Length: 276
Image (tube, rainbow, N blue to C red; front, side):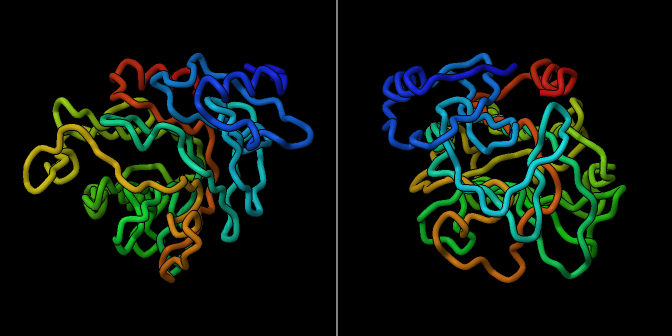
């Protein structure tokens, strides 16, 4: 739903959230969708890409680099390319969560063999680690991915969940809109992956069990987080040069949400059915 936000209202919200209002000082304040949540609620980050990159939870503006927008699953959507991405000063309170749900819609085709791995999003860290991330999602190129079988790799705190080979995601890269959700529950230390409202079942333990030094991880503890990137690797938020195989996302994205809790299967299905 659309809502005209006055600068005064947004500054008051920013003050309540402990965020300086200077970041909102832009001409032509855009309209952007409001989700039924408030700063400090379970929805930590939300952008609907309605011709703007702004996050609706704390009016958190990102920096668009060659970003364009097109028709989405609901309203408009971000259209990625080989030279575009969006970087944010933060993903609001995402760095403080101990469980999470990352939910979004995507439309994508396999990219060319040998062209590298496309990063859908990344949560950067200044910790001394080669990929400079606390979490990311990437898609392998056409050597591993087809329209029917997509090779995806999701990472949480240097544990890689590799949906490759026989476990590739089915029919996600067929140039149609699909809803994806990754849900981590600290009470079970399990990762659940959803496609179009349905949880993937029968997966091996290396795609479901989240570990810390060989034990169930429990509560997450993200450290030294610095920024957030949609459409590219973490390096882009850290003024660092990505490795040559790390490339920008060329598909489309819509309704990007990060929750600070593990949503239930019913809640995920509701997001899918309502195209949220």
